[in-house]
Each structure stands twice: as structure tokens, then as C-alpha cells.
Image (cartoon, rainbow, N blue to C red; front, side, top):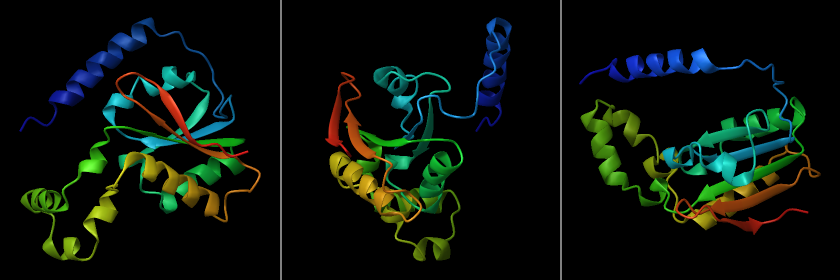
Length: 179
């Protein structure tokens, strides 16, 4: 296994990027006062932002596997975006054809064991839940919206919307519009 191959590629790309980059001082405050909770799927990179009309500096984007693990860290990030960074609206944006909807817990466990994860560690968690596997993309968006809204750290006056995007045609569908 070649470990530093990707690192070298990234560093070379960065050198090229910096040559043509025109520095611009941006605020850490999201200009559109928006926080987005979404999936880490690679197909969303360079796709989601233009599909919803946001650019660099416009929104806080919180990503995780399957847009599903609404745990302490996700809620903490949304709360920080609201209370410390001026966010006034939250969007949970899932996508169809999500890899976390097709997770096979047994295969995942076997892969983890093969890579050296201890049996004891694996026996202490519900692996499907821990990894953020979901049963359905639309249903998952609705669950995440409700979990965020139910948090005592999220003010009632902050709208939390649920949307889903099609990775193949870019069409966005509203699943929950919070007024």
C-alpha cells in the first residue's frame, strides 16, 4: 500500500492553486446566515453548493456519513453556528442513492476486523447505528430535522428545513418546510 501517494498529489495541486489564487479576506460568519447538515458523499463535492446557490463564505456546512449521525457533535456544531456565528436558518439536505442506505453491518464488521479493530470494541456498539447506516434517504432527512429541532440548544425561532437532492439531475425536493 502506497501511503504518501495521495499526499504528494494534494501538495502539487495546492502549489498550482496558489499560483493563480487571488486572496480575499472573508469573514468566518456565514454571509447567508445558513447552516447546512449534509452527507459526506464525494458526489456532493462541487455539486451541492452550486445546485443551491451558495458560494465560498455563504454557509456553515456540517458533513457526516449518511447525514445521519445526529449526535452531540452535529448538534454542537449547529448550536455553535447559531449562537456564535449568526446562523438564522438550518437546512438538512440528504441525497438519493446514499451509500449509508446500503450498509451491510456484517460485511462492515468483517472489514473492520480484517483491518485490526478489536472484537471487544465491536461488541460494545450497535455497529449499524454507530456508523450512521440509514433505512431510507427521505425518512432519514425527517429524523435528522426532528432531532435538531428537539435539541434544547436549538432555539424555537430558528427554522430547520428538510430537503433531498437527486445526484443525477440536481433537482431539489423539499421534505419539510419549517415556518
